[in-house]
Length: 207
Image (cartoon, rainbow, N blue to C red; front, side, top):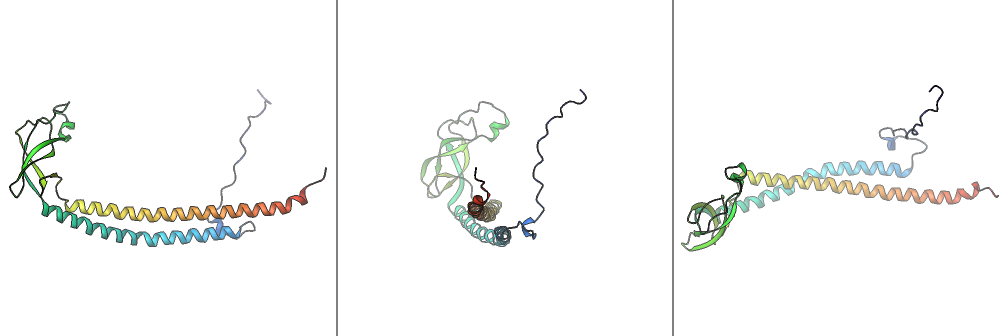
């Protein structure tokens, strides 16, 4: 209907702040704004400088650790024949792709390098019957274990720790910036309260 009441519109939001507004000189800029700007820049520079160093140091330590671990595993583990003591469970979906990936822990009999026979638990494919022979990795004590770490696995774990170190530095820098911003905001609020306590009585009109 012509001349009807127009639909109410929400009030416009505050205008977007200009980029790097804390660095621009203006009458409303506070000293804490400059402090926060410089602090943010300092944290950013520190993170960019420290993160690669932390990643390199942690990565080097992780690489040496996993290399030593792989060398130890190669010296103390070996691949041998194992005989199933009991039947392995059958997979509920025979012939499926899931069955090919599934492994069940079953007791097997192995012989150590010293010639001792012992029983341990190893993961085998579904449906194997007692007496079946499988190849498993065992330790010097005859315990079933995974294969020694490969060079690719060593590099992958090293890269993972290096990445975690870099992320940790970035998170620490973010936390420092957030805490400092919170402290500065609390300081601003305290100064506003003090200024209002001084100004309010002059604005109060007796009734």
